[in-house]
Image (cartoon, rainbow, N blue to C red; front, side, top):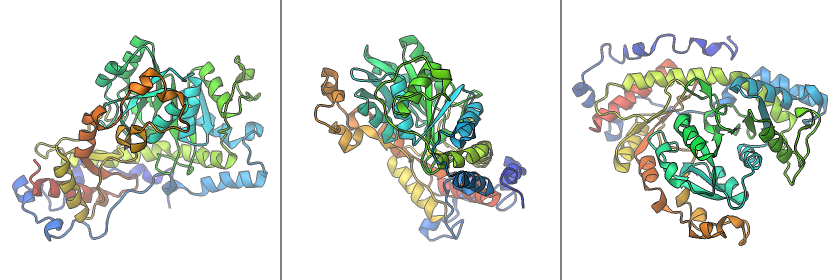
Length: 448
């Protein structure tokens, strides 16, 4: 039996074009395909059992993770500060090398990574930070917990922040932009970085949902001033929880290190550093988490390669459908291929498509892993941990209004988008079934 470092290398060997040789030999005409009775209307489904994606990382757990964990158990030293033998330190070095940055810091979650990154950037009361209206709650929460003011920008068809909507949100108080790469799709970094340079702003890359993603040949996390990633269950690799801060800037790194370790800078870091201590937190990663991530880091490219291969086959297998509008991406080669999402034009058409896909035995849904943040009740109410919290007590904080009125385009895009979440371990037969189901439903519902 092949080990996990090898067994996926044959995925895609048949080539994308061969996937249709088919389900009936030569590809049938659109008219013939469109007459096949849909399962939702009583026809025979493409699959008898439901096909669905699973969290990627745990599918690759094996003796490598077991050996690393046993090392920690046998050492009887689960605290990360154990010198060069530290699993956390070994993971950090490997992760930094992989992404192409000088420094990586392991922390307890993607959320604490965000907090450490904002502390590194010295974001605080009076500052404004621009973020996408569609993203995970933590991107908003850490800004508020820093005492700063979140300012939402619309997304575009990539489901990421629309660079063309950023500049209008900038004020003299704006200090940073959070460029989030969501559900496997890289943010469009060139225009974001250009805007940041023009206005002397910092860029924080949140690539939690796109670990292993690239943009024009560079790994996500290596282009902004500082970056963060998460290793929670639903991410490319996982330790259940965990996160990392990455940067090429030694001062930003020192501030992040101090913030995550009660203001201290131990001898292992930067030869003593150049900054003083300050009020901080404790977000230290333990050795058990570091052990899992040290093993999982070796699987990043294997997982990404398999995802991209399967997704490319599906995209090519449906590319000739008339009027097809796939999810936008600024870099198809660097995109992880987490989703095959279609823009169906309206929520009603999208929901009908998803119901029909599920009836065919293919799990399908709308965008996930994030929230349309301005429409969240607690955000509309500007709820904080204390009534005198500074974020919303400044004139600007009192004046800002959240709710659906501040992100109508984001709401429209999210509700008209849907499709299939891909999996690195889908077989060629699974991929054929996805293609067949999309073609059958798209044409059968007359969505062209």
